[in-house]
Length: 425
Ligand SMILES: [Zn+2]
Image 1 (cartoon, rainbow, N blue to C red):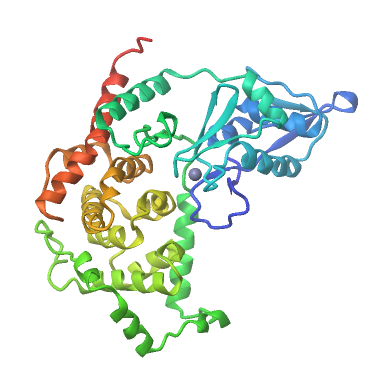
Image 2: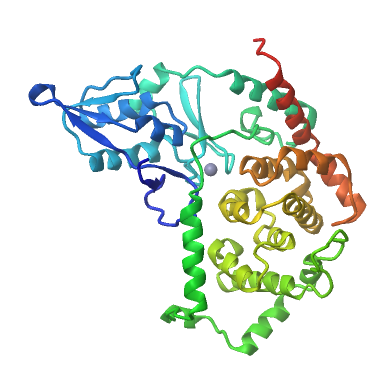
């Protein structure tokens, strides 16, 4: 298999979960008959969730060369000799123009072609952005709309039903085209995190930390790290913070994690302090959080997930999940971890709902993102949704969260039923 590169090559973070194979080419023939075979075009196209014909046609336009559009033998050909590195560069342009969400730069977008417009529908932030119709490939895309698969249809139908039943969006300002609350989680095969790179990075960072070989950069001194300053900062934390992090109520605990909870509190406090230092929780890096958890010896504990959910997420949770998903995926290793994720989320929502009553409207989107990023399984969410519990929050809050989650749970059931029956449209 070819080496993997980040879909956005301007991102060097190995945690970046969107990878694709580096383009491989083979020059064949000579003279006027010389041609370039893009050996792994299908794989790259699949990673980008775009038809191969879009990619090869884009190369053709950019290079002013002829291409074949639908090779039965998977041999994608561009006339003339072209280096792989050049194609890779052109691919960056394709990705920027036809794949990345214009708002959040996430590559997980679906193409919608409708009424002469090409829209990129972002799975991460819900934004729908227009593709520039003056681009040559846009003309091609408008004429070559890929056929919808049966699964697409079933998903859309189930989503529609869930939306009608759920009424999760009440503002109505954007019309139904913008109401993405109940869009089904897409199954983006081929877009996967590179687990090995992640593991390597974590190991090497942890190693550096253990050896205390970290160089202190000048700008790190810009933050006052004296004991007084830290204590003062701790005192600035809202009083409710301790309560928010309350970790009791985990009565099934068999791992001797009960009692003082000091390590968990330490992790939570540390994350909050980092967030303050760095001007916001979104500036605290996954790797740092993970290394800290490891340092405290709790990176594998399900209760750590409970702490994380309540610290790395806030009222903007729906725009934060995708970025944190690789770390969470790494740390959620059992059903108990999944339950902790859901329980922590309940507690977060309960905590925030005082100031942000709209939190309940976000439940479907949150669950959808968790499910989409493989952080919870269908079985665990379904079971969780079936019964309110006072384990993590007041029963009244728990009930409200369950109520808000109903459209998603129903969607899961319907998607299941749909996939069982043959398509009827
Ligand atoms: Zn987006």
